[in-house]
Length: 546
View: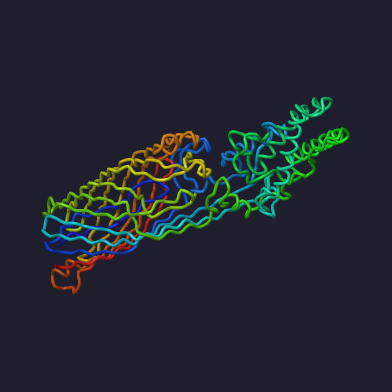
């Protein structure tokens, strides 16, 4: 009786971790000389959780503890701890208002539910020109989907709102331009009069300038960025990032800002009257400082993420679907043994960079492949232990090549990074090993039932800037991307196979076909970003004699 191994599973890797495509196992079944084996089918991989690890954002998390894959996008009070790009805005408001560390920017409650699935339709062809040598090509058609449900501040729950709203300049472009122009003109006038105006009023002009220039220029920057002209009283060598939010009217910070503007305009108008009495005209400064009248809503929170002119300039944390070619595999094998108790193969596989990586401007994209080249060497062994019991033993070693790609440089536990953190990096995926054990019980000459245990370990990925000068621009070393990129996992599953090969060779079947179904689950993972994925596969194959 010819040994019929358990189901063949080609498992496409998940792009939230950088691991190569993995085969649950490749059996060592020899092909007769001149035989062509054609296979196709479908594989469905799904996950909502991952195996985490302790980190600064969640130090109480245990190594390997399950957590939602959207955990680091969610917060009871979304602020600087999740969005570091807001830190300059928060610091500016603390300085202007005098609230100090007692003030924290809060965009409100946010919760992101992510549901990832990858569907691969592998088309595989194997050809054996001789009984001991064979070649293969596998082309996966991949559809990756990340379903995202962002729950922001809820209008029915006032406790979910934060202390900021959408910047009026975003809602109505130019809404703060008049204030900025008047503030700059007034400060310019004070600076000029302090040195060349009426002597009796020079000291007052200088004192008023010194008192209000820091706060007014801070509000000038928050209203729409720092002045570009070096002669401006509000010029800053390091411009403040585009400000998507401002304190909402009625909040402590908003009241402080309005009080500063009201008091400053009153003091300026009093001095302006004195200048007018001496026949000197200086520009008026009466434009109020517009602040948002309502706290940030769910839709406005999405707008903060997706505004192409904003600091994030990313997607709106909604569903992302990709369909395309995965990483194509070219391989070959040498049949070392084909006896009644042992069948063994040595195989070499080259994985081509034909898949598409996730988009650097998307926080939830999966992509269709790793888009880099690697070489895998494997040993496949079928041990025939009796008339019905078989055992597959396989081992794989993968050597992965370096490549270059665009990434947002940020620690893995702070996934939301500003567009300014984007840079070209050189990525060197860690090499990997895999061990596959699959005992099988032969039910009859057509059906077999198998169980599988699969261990996979990949070393950490390393990153470096293509242009070393980018480190100063981004503000972080490229090695920040190295964290939590090592992978260790164990999967277990079951499979059932129907094959008419034995009956075909005995003249009792018209077609030589093979149909296999299997399911495996990720039971254990370490490294910090290992998806807790379930994988179901259905493959159909047939054999042709050329």
